[in-house]
Figure (tube, helix red, strand yellow):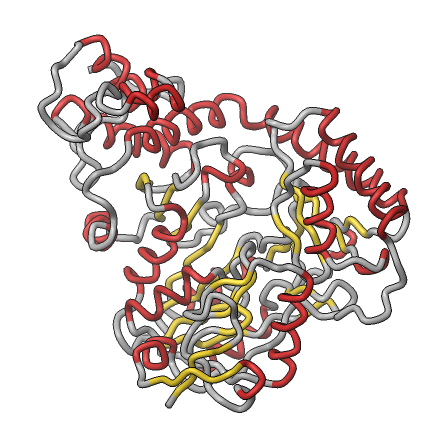
Length: 482
């Protein structure tokens, strides 16, 4: 057998061989290479439909890989500096949940920042694990949650020496990184696993001068959204593991929830994107950073807006910053982030990643062009001129530290009643309330509803945030403990 290297893409190559075989399909999917659904074929193209196929011997099986998928996973592990890597077709949500399910069983404690993605709290509901939340520091000017400080982690370990794992965001949605190496050393010294949500950190592994990666810091497991900055198709991600993680058991954990009908469109996109980044990642992300830095400089020159960067670094709760992130504070121009988000889309046909109460995030990648960046800068300048106002009546905070009274699983499955939002203060929530994106809960099951949180929810609704997580689609009522 020919030795594989990063120039290979085993799944992609197998699909090309398979397409040449002209096999007659009497298996699923039922569209039979697109012939059974011509409208869909016209929309997506014959090439796409021809490789939307089922697992079979020439193409391997994601649940139990022995050939081309196994080879592709080996190449991914090498590219990311991991001992093992698994292809995930349920998004980084499934990767985050798998690593928590690996580390924790019912009743086990896990130390984590409260500004985690909802997928992590969902995993607590699935496993019955008990969160020990580290409420991160907040930048009061920007109103955003920061990373975990080392002293906060040390305190959490002292108070919970029986915790099984520590979870870290690397980076946060806004680009902020904790001191991952030091936190990993602390955790390992106390026999705890380190789980890292690197949904927004794919590029750290391939570019120069980025914050440290989970694998380089010695973390045990990392979830990587290849579809965000890595170029693969939406919903495709990697789960990376260090030397001490039992990869065979991890696959069993993944297979509890992973589909048995994995999409070869997603698998091949991961394979091809890994090859591309392994061969050209430094150049790709150098260009990305150059565009982000240019946009940041020009937006700051407009006045009012604040596109922040490494000047925020304080050596602890902001240990490092991802300069490819174009995070912009908008309140000084008298507009909430979500208002700028909506104006960019509705008035200028520009779709950015998200807007929250005080900030926007424009995702910059190698797929952008200089003229796209110029269009964004010009639009933001016009928005300030046309729609800017004084900042009176603007909420200043983005993150509210929660009061946790019950474990998420217990609250989620408990007897509950529905009450009007205005009458819910002092009660314990049994569901999620969040703006999506970014998908960080304002409230999670088991948390106390306070007047401050009610004010925040009403303000976010008024400003047009896309609110999700509740049974009541209008978020006029909340489910609370009976």
